[in-house]
Image 1 (spheres, rainbow over the protein chains, first blue to last red):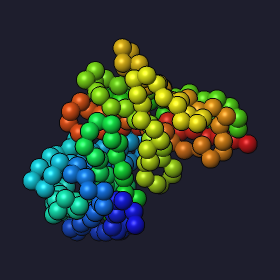
Image 2 (image 1 turned 90 degrees about the vertical axis):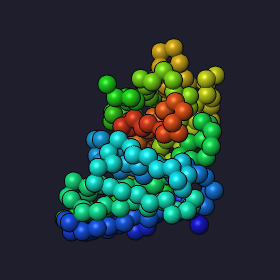
Image 3 (image 1 turned 180 degrees about the vertical axis):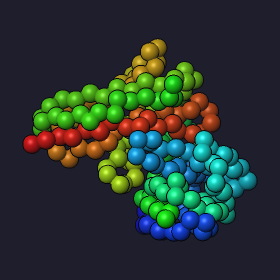
Image 4 (image 1 turned 60 degrees about the vertical axis):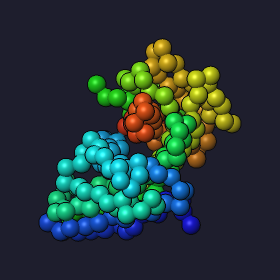
Length: 113
Length: 110
């Protein structure tokens, strides 16, 4: 099994619909992150969490919400999807200590029509 | 000014060539540095961490210059399989977040 699992892998949804992207990790790390990636804009941080009770906004949190259901699970919701939220979404986890990098999930390709 | 800047390329090189990528960062308090590799439509994967003394992993050498706030990645004897986007990544002080550059695209040709 992958260390970080994202579901779904691909999703097409209509404008105005609510959609949830799910992420789970088996690395036992406290720190989890949601990023989106757009061509020419790189990876941008949406939300991050350092434990179940610690949720923080990233640089582009408007239009998104998150839930940290357990240490291993961190979901991202789009309350009312809009076309400019079409992107590749990545979940990541990171161990304690500066020397750890991120481990990413395989990504969710979301298209809002 | 972006926190982490890279030349987007693309760098087109023949097999066997040596190629170098540079990256600059703006936060002098940054403590951790990495190079990631990303293949098209796939997740970024850690290529190597970058240490103050510089470090090498096979054909790949990473260097850090804290005074000038730049990081480099050298790839020797390029292979076709090295074709990818290389992301410079910097730890944002003690916030636990990593800041990504936009990536440098490398295309190795036969």
